[in-house]
Image 1 (spheres, one colour):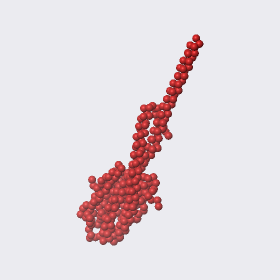
Image 2 (cartoon, chains in turn orange, green):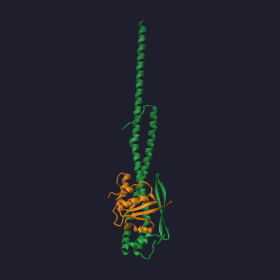
Image 3 (cartoon, chains in turn cyan, blue):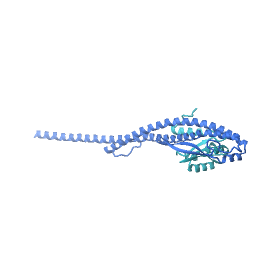
Image 4 (tube, one colour):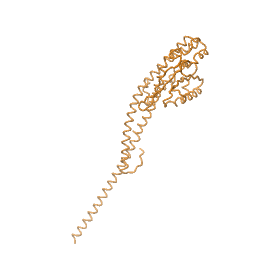
Length: 106
Length: 221
């Protein structure tokens, strides 16, 4: 079985991914992003990259795929820069597993 | 502690003792599973954090190069150049099993005319765009790896949470409950036993007193 890789985000952040063989979907609003995410998750996409700007606004839609093996929904920083949202997600899964944050305390 | 309603019989006690032994064994196994999962998880999550930091930093340089490329040619031209890529990314997914959790393993390959090279025509695009795309291509394996690691971390986190809940349920609810029930049955049985002994002693006393009285009566005659 072959899978595809999708990218969701605003056009300036994700246009480069077109050239490397990913399926790029450009969206303008968080609602569109959520709709596209759900649609693509149901098709045979194994990895969905979504820019932090939209990921932040639709945590529920993303959380729905957290516990299933596929697809893997990964946030990437958009052109406006890394906001630390992706790292915060890792922190959250540490808290979930260990019960306390033991990796990120500075 | 909410105690189970059980019949105070030896039969019931035997059954509960069997259940208690099973619960204890399950508890030990699950505890071992939890510890091992935790060990694996911490390694993975640490790698995940480092990889994410590296990928985010490199992705930012890609974005920077892209915006330079975009400023040099019109966005329409850029879109046209990239819109119809000659390459197609194909991802195959296999699974590996870690402590009975199915984890996806991604394997990415490029297919099509431009595989390993340029995926668009040079005619209308700038050198800056080529550089940006080259940077992005270099980043791809790490991006895929990040997707895999992050998924693995999420799934292990879920499994650990589930296992921990089970361990706690066994340790703090099931096992004490069984112990309490067995204790109460034992007490009830012991109480019956004592009641029986006392009754026997009483009967014996009565019988002895009666025999004594008869013996005295016979002596008097």
